[in-house]
Length: 485
Picture 1 (cartoon, helix red, strand yellow):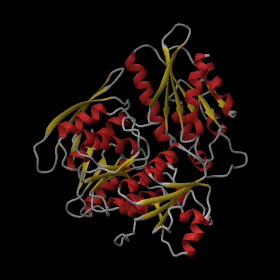
Picture 2: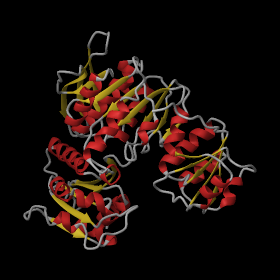
Picture 3: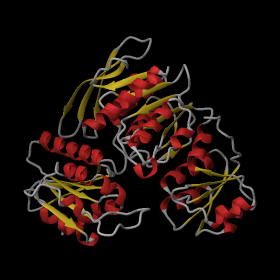
Picture 4: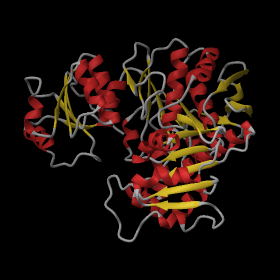
């Protein structure tokens, strides 16, 4: 790929500035001294925060919004997926010959000149990126970062740091990760997804292979999970092309050195004790131990990736481990939302998770079951799941049914279409009809009735999980209210 074009970021206008990704980059721009303007369809907390920082933001889209700061912007940023091309602000920018770029172009520009640590993969990007940031912060590094979710402790998803590193998610959904040139790239896993864009599993896997070839030659590293078949395969092929590849996990590989080997994980009711053998190139191996507050083997693997990425960046390993022990999660990643005692028995606990692919749903439900088993109190796991996208639901209906079967009972809401139009005759019944007949399963098409439907299934001590990438997150608070009632 050709060298990235450079843009003048002195005056930046952002269409859809209130979005999670856009608002984060807007905060970095303001902190760097850029004049930031923007627009969105509604007021929101990110919009209010940006206004307080000095950004000029209009509600509603209009051509005159480009002039909010008194002169035209030097560049306009948009999300091609979320913002239609006939948007009046984009049309005005084109008429005035103002460059219109994607969010990924802006992120690439902001990362220029920094040590770029980029986290890629079908699942786990946000959690692993967040762990890496928390570990580096504990190690005294003040990294810049852009994350898909908010760090619970920091309360933000982006930051302009004073340190040399820039940590960010590398999104593959539209191949935008090929805009970046990482010094350290992590591939957590690779499983066919976003086939509406890529068309085939082969094309989807190729984007990660192409990303590996973007790594800084000679000094850069690709870090891959050896417990994931496709990630290890992509790593081995990259190594054959001359990319420096290191692995993590409990598995070994003939072509990839194991730089962070999982020696053990011991689950308790509250934490998971992790032991790792860290063997960096040119250094003596050492054993590292830390406690992880977030349950699940997938989270243990994510922490190994964060530890290895941080160590390769030059940070102190013991401090990185301390940062992982202190890490208390990301919003909507097994996020604790509250507990209510019912009938004088043990409290029912409610968690919320963003999982929206069958593998992610399986991982979070296994983590919940492991947590329940470690507590030894006979707690059951109740899933309240909302499928995301008609295309994904139809592609993976059997897999979703298998994943949800890991719960003890499930309430399945109707499909959250997001950017897609409804498909005639398709509802979440294509999932529930494939679930075990002896399992308590409810298809609940009435969103407002979902909290009471969940509570009908609950017993004292149970763990309830609201799961999905759509509006299901709003139900956690309502389920707690229903339990109190």
